[in-house]
Length: 81
Image (tube, one colour):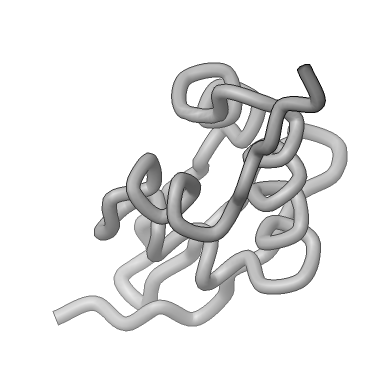
């Protein structure tokens, strides 16, 4: 079984990079993720917060969770119209 040994956001590539004990590596393209699942600025902001402050939680959400449901539950968009 492989164990996660590091999880960091790489500012140069805009990717969250996970490295495992067996030498394998996963790179999550954060820009592509935002373009695919974030519908508004509030959702993009939430994803950015996770990337910079808790990249492990971000990776877990993208790889194992339902990111769209999460974003809908933590962001509230109220139109001013």
